[in-house]
Length: 250
Length: 309
Ligand SMILES: Cc1cc2nc3c(=O)[nH]c(=O)nc-3n(C[C@H](O)[C@H](O)[C@H](O)COP(=O)(O)OP(=O)(O)OC[C@H]3O[C@@H](n4cnc5c(N)ncnc54)[C@H](O)[C@@H]3O)c2cc1C
Ligand SMILES: Nc1ncnc2c1ncn2[C@@H]1O[C@H](COP(=O)(O)O)[C@@H](O)[C@H]1O
Image (cartoon, rainbow over all chains, first blue to last red; front, side, top):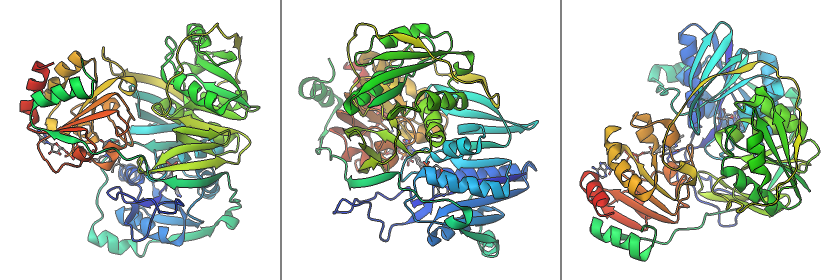
């Protein structure tokens, strides 16, 4: 079976972003971009399933502007077999991205679609389950362990109370959590090889998806800043401040 | 306006975050109904009926909703909310699991993790790990929204009970089933609603050393949290992770011990009222958000701290 892995290009996790002074959005000029960390975990999981012989082909797909090819090449360097870029503006809503991915899914008919649980820029946590609903597939979200057996997929999920295990029939949708695996690094020879791997480029029109505006962003502003605090010299002083100044302990 | 809120519960007790969701709904304004889906959960519906501000409780009592699996929950909520103007649930792992499915079924966007309401269609939400706050306007006929647990105060008090109506969803699909769960057992307050939280990071060195936090937590009635590094290293379980991709907390007092203060950790705690940091590195970024910083070796400071409480 094929595994399809949707990957998003985002600002690198180590960058502290700045809001544009006109309140129109985030200043992305000269900011380091990367594959969304949860998508790297998704690629890694697909590669491990291929290495176990459970998956034949790993396909990375991204929806966004031409520059997303960089992140798709990264996925190819990690070991994905081929990539698909669906060219689109970079402000599509998850509902539209899910529709685009549904159209790709119809062409590829993968047995497993592995998403990240969340993109670290928009912090939406939506696209995987939306896609699952549109395609009518069951989902195992926030996965920290995935086991495939007898045409079913058993997923251990990181939930607020601890861990929950569900069994879902395949084809299935997974979204990855942090503890699922530790992604590998791309080796130099693999980076070279990746340049020759196939990358298809599709358009929204070809896939028959319309870009409807569901949400309008009115403003983007910095969060309220905290007042600078003080350093205390000792535990004794700390306890005194908490008791008598902040009054948060008895 | 007709708003459908989804209750969060474990079939016995209503979770406090439900009252936060109802507060957000009441700020939107209009008729607010609350859906309680589960099995053998009439008791929960009765608790829910006493929350001020709701006009009725819909009770979907059916074994297929026992574990709130996304597939049956989404079918039910999309059906119950199809005539509503808004559908609101908590941005918890339960809510996040089914709300996007509901939105997709209704062919609308979802607005995730809102922290403010400025009109029936306009909401605030943090993006980029809380480093920016976006104000967004929805153009969809039905607004599917998940609400941040620390974004609103919980509705308080009790009211004359709202009527409870039985509600039936469709048949179960059977392509997903619950296998089991391992839930953390703790006598301590729940992390996301505790008044005091004390968290340990990689500086704790191992799980055994979290005992140093327990003594203090006992004295302060605190919940215990952790950084991702402490969870990844296996010191403590995943449900203790505070941060952008873990739990968001905003207690009266947050004490960060042996935590450097990465962007992703700050995202989960920087709305706390008072922040204390104990770290041996005076340059650690956590000190930039701390009201009281103590540069010290935690292994020396924690026993002294416990002693003086
Ligand atoms: C996609 C993604 C999501 C993430 N999500 C989260 C999240 O939700 N939550 C989260 O916390 N992180 C998250 N992270 C990880 C985050 O970037 C940091 O790596 C992590 O928070 C670091 O944890 P730490 O502060 O415990 O460890 P470190 O950064 O290693 O800091 C340890 C600190 O302990 C101090 N220390 C050591 N020994 C002592 C001692 N004896 N006494 C006193 N102080 C001592 C050190 O000075 C240091 O400051 C995420 C990262 C990514 C990429
Ligand atoms: N533009 C995109 N292209 C491909 N996959 C995406 C895109 N946006 C989101 N995804 C996938 O959906 C996951 C969750 O994203 P989000 O719903 O934005 O939090 C990501 O980790 C990706 O797997």
